[in-house]
Length: 422
Ligand SMILES: [Zn+2]
Image (cartoon, rainbow, N blue to C red; front, side):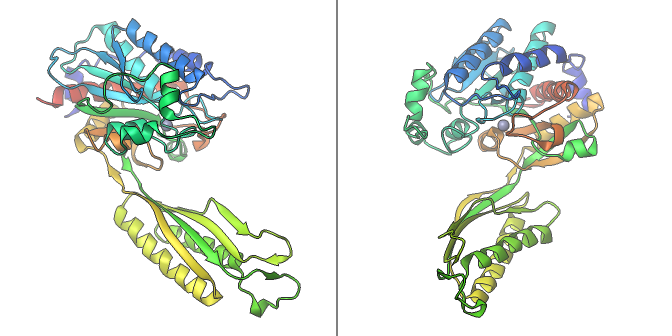
């Protein structure tokens, strides 16, 4: 659809950026921290309060607000044709323990700004428009992340999700019931025409390039590995260098290789060793065993596979040369997600209609949209955040950028409203 399609579809409507910013500051008080961040773990009292705020705000705009058996909230604005499935927007209102005011929140409150703009103008869409607040996107209290959108998309069963426990042994299902959000409607029994998610980039690219909008084409592929290297504990003073089996030295060489492999498959490849346990971890013992993780990511699954093959060959060589035993397991494989070309075209047309500086971008992090892409045409819109900083109380975004993102969300939804089921 060209931008003329957007203009036909209420192209003169824009969001109220001031009201959106006020909403961000108001909700940031629920679980607000002294350092200016937000601590609003899923299914806590703070989560209950922000859910009630969300429901009241949407109801005031004429929406019907419901929640399903996983506690996902849906605010529905009717369209002209009640037989059509809704065009949806969404993200999450839960945060990390030391989270910021924007991660997830911009997507939900940006969607609220869209509903407010439609309500204020009285514009009638063909499809119902729905705004979704997903339960437990962060996975900080109940692992894994994106748990409820995962159930919605059939990635996890509802029972396995309900049985997850937090560090205090509290069941997800019990915590959900305790805050009053275990709904009757089965999670996932809810057709969706399209899904759009506005989010901060959580990386530094848009800011560095002076772009306002990231047109998100997909989510990169990720693979996680766990390795145990086995050498021989021995005395640091009496064991000659030539007679050691130093597991930590071999690990260091592998860490170097992870970085080299990522650089060799650049510029879009990343490789990280973020967790390492050295045993016995004593200052005068040559380390006999090391356990560590590897995280490899690239937008193209074929490149992720090539990175793995390259890395495995280098690791084999390192452990053979060092006389070290190796156990290596791939513990997670998340294929690259390619968002829907028509939804991406709607975001592009919307961005062009405002003339915002923009670039295509692949998400480096997981989002609810990655699971929604399995069950509905889906894409995302990114806006910059200061220094690329996220999952941090100092997370920051500019009011103008957030409003621009919500404007793109609005026009992309209106564009899809014309184009879909036509
Ligand atoms: Zn998020």
